Every structure is written in structure tokens, then in C-alpha cells.
Image (tube, rainbow, N blue to C red; front, side, top):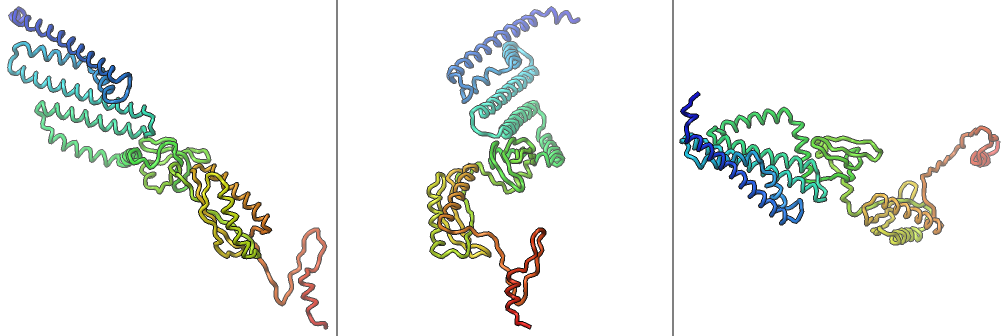
Amino acid sequence: MNWDVMLNERLWINIAIIAGVTIVSYLVLQTILRIITNRLRKMSKGSRSGFVAIAAEMLSRTSHLLLIALSLLIALKVVKLPDRWESAMSHGWFIALAFQIALWMDTAVRLWMESLNRDGKARNPVTTTIIGIMIRIVIWTMMLLSILSNLGVDITAMVASLGVGGIAIALAVQTLLSDVFASLSIGVDKPFEIGDFVVFGEVAGNIEHIGLRTTRIRALSGEQIVCANSELLTQILHNYKRMNTRRIVFKFGITYNTPSDKVREVSALVKQIIDGLDNAKFDRAHFLAFDDSQLTFEVVYIMQVSDYNAYMDTQQEINLQLLDGIREMGLQFAFPTRSVEFIGGSFPELTVAGLPKETPAANQEAQSALPNG
């Protein structure tokens, strides 16, 4: 044991000074932080969102170990140290401050994400989580690179090697990354949100969950459909939740023996029916075409609400009133019919079980028309 060092009075005085200054500095720093934090909390008036509230919460989560390290660095500045210790001290200051700043920024990002999820607005939680993770990765990466650069490490070659490695990893997990970025695109662009009713391809249902890789849809028949986010974005998607009005087109037909003046009255009847209904705005009703077995009408009206059940109730009421109105006018709805005419011959004899065999009337007329003998 080196007794000269142990009995060096100057050494023990320096150690005592360092210990005392460290303790005093720690208490002073902690007191200052507590005062600032309490004042910021009073300014925020109990709110957990907003810049002042986030700043107060961020300062309250200052690392005590880092406070001790900073206090020790302050104490080491008081005593006379060799030059090599001065260089180490400068690096220590930078590392401690960089780490604490990164810790504060990380806390601020987490608190900001929590405030976004609490504000009651419809947001995709997956998107906010991804954005928060990406920002925090950038913060800690910049902190690490700045510390390495301060220590004299050549970070240019390191960044280049990380770039090559990143490309290799990206190629290996290409499908996963495409789904993750598709989820981020869904959150930013918002083609649909949780609760929306969507239709694409042969799928129709309500969006139940938007994840990192997949989106879950509850179909009308009850089952859950899971679709990859990247595949979902390639589809032509109909979002009925965002529909403000609904344009309805339907057709019906009446028989060919309807007089032309009655045909004109049918359009007026349809207009009268639709004008008398709530949430429905009449657009037009026209005699459209001469079809095979009917005179076809086309009707267009606008539903002022997007609810599908309200539309079906309105359409049912139109159909019922149209049925009554057509009958009151003495007209008939058309249905497919076919007429067959035999010329120069006779109908074949038909035998139906349980019925007496009879000669068709058309056959009797044909036989009477033939010359005798």
C-alpha cells in the first residue's frame, strides 16, 4: 500500500471538497427542479395536456442518477485536476447533458402521444404509436451518434455500414415493412377509421381494428375478416360512413294495355308519393322504355340521410303507396308473359293426372274449320 498517497493531506482535502460540493450541488439542482416543476403545474391548472403541462411532467421525470453525475462534475470543477482529467471532464459533461436532453425529449414525446389518445378525437392508435416510436428512435440515435462523435469516433464509416445493413434487413422483411408503412399511410391519409362501414371486392363490414400488419373487419354475416394493410390499400374501397346523401334509382313496369294519358299520370303519382315523405327529395320519374312485357318507368330520388335502415324504410313506404296508387288508377303492374300462336295446326293433347281428358278449344275450332269429307 502506498502510504504516501494515503497520508497526502491535500488529497483528502480535495476528496472532502468534492463530496461536499457534490451533495450541495445535488440538493440545489433538485430544489430548483422542484420549484420550476411546481410553478409549471400551477400554470397548467391541473391539465395533463398542453405545452406547460408536458414541460412540468418532463422535468419531474429528470433522472436522479444524472443529477448526481452532474453534481459530481460540478464538484470536480472546483478542485485543480491534471490536463488529462480536464479532457475527460469535458466529455463527461457532454455525455451527461446529451443523455439528459434525450431523456427529456423521450418523455415529452411519450406524454404528447398520451395526450393525443386522451383528447377524444378519432385517431388510429397504431399510427400514433408508430410515429411516437419513430421519433424516439431518431432522438436516441442522434444522442448516441453525438456522444460517439464527441469521443472521437469516426461516425461516417459507421453510418455507411449501418446503411448497408439497413438495406439488407429491409429486403429480408420487405413484406412486413410494406404492411407497417401501409398502416402508417392509413393513419395519415385516413381512407377509413375504426367504426366505418366499407365495401371492397366481395367484403362488406365494419372496421373493427387497424393493426401494424392487418386490418380486421366484422362482416354483416358476423364473421371477422382479416386483411393485410398493403393489400387493402390496393383495393377500390367504398366508405359508406362518409356518405352524406344517397342517390336511389329504381324501376317498375305497367302493362302494355295502359292508355297514354294514364301513363302520364303515373309520373305525377310517383312525384306526389316521394314529396310526401321525410328525408326523401324527388329528382325525376320518367317513362323510360318499351321492354319485352312492360312499359318501364325509371325513378330517381335523393335520401337526405346516409343511414341504410332509413333508406330501406323509405323505399318500402314508396313501394306500398305506389302499389295502392296504381290499383286505384285501375292499372296493373306488368309481369313476364309469353303468347304462343299455332297457325295451320292444332295444340298437342295435354293429359293432367286426375282431370278428364278434353279436347282443347283451339283444336275444336281448327277441326270445325276443316272441309267435310
